[in-house]
Every structure is written in structure tokens, then in C-alpha cells.
Length: 184
Image (cartoon, rainbow, N blue to C red; front, top):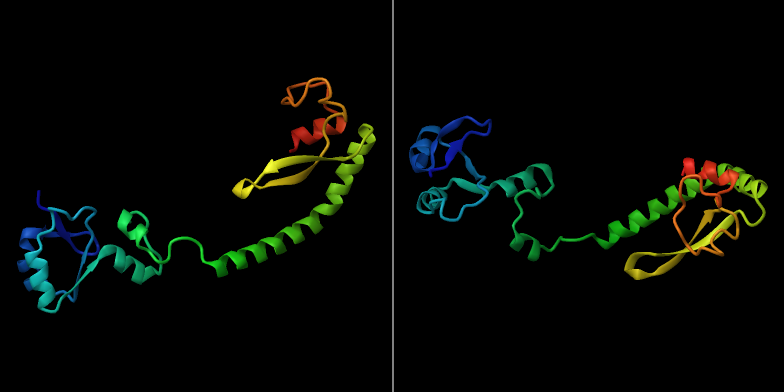
């Protein structure tokens, strides 16, 4: 099946077999080819003759990248990913991201400190024991890290049953814990 030749606005001009006549009529400065699969569909002789006559022929993805400064991911093919020099994050960007993430976290911590102090006091008042408890988690590259959470259950909640999920109307949940579970 012959593919259509279209203007940038989408108006169909004809089929690929009509390429020479369309170029003679319109005298374009460049031709942008935007076919998802060119194998066995794009005749090579006509575009090659046009290219040798001085008409620029570009891939639609290259034109998109030159126009917008970004690569379109919808048309990428595996070899483009395999041989790309720019795949993955750049170390400078990672450093900048770490810096502004740290700044945002510090600002958020300053804003949240009064709320966290209020919650800690509510937990302490509602049941005996510490306001926070330590929980081990697994992070990037399987590195174990510690996270501190406000306690929502009594201190000995898992002494007899072990670690189990909280259920509705769980008797182990403290008064402040009910509020924490609702607003987690």
C-alpha cells in the first residue's frame, strides 16, 4: 500500500509514487519523512535523487528535536537507545536535584515542626510510652534504613501477636492513633 504525502498542516498531496511530480510543483526547501516503519515502504531511489539535487530530507524525529529541543519518545527504536550517548541522568543534574530536594525538605521540616510537636504531645498524652517508634525499611540498592513514625498503637501491641496489619476497630490502636490512621 502506498503511503500519503502530506503538507505540514495535514493536507494530503498524493502518494509516495507521486513524489517527483509533487516536488516539481511545490519546490520545497526540505522534506520531512515521518513514517513509523520505513522498511519495504519507503522507496529509496526517488528520495536519494531529490537529496542529491539539493533538497534537504530529514527524519521527523530529528526535526522535532531540532525544533523543540526535546526528543520524542514515541518514535524511538531500540538502536537509538542502545547507542545513545545521552541516555540516563547526568551527574550534574543529579547533584542539583539532590541539593534542591534537600532545601525543600529542610523548608518543609521547619513548617511541619509545630504540627509534629503537637502530634507527639497527643500521642504521649493518649498512652504511656515514647511518641515515636523506629521501623526498618529497605531503600535503593537494598540498603536498610531507619524511619521514625508516630506511634499509633500501645507500646506492647505486637508482643503477643507479632507484626500484623491493623484492622477496623483494632483494640491495639490508641485514641491519638485513631486520629493518625484517619489522617495518615
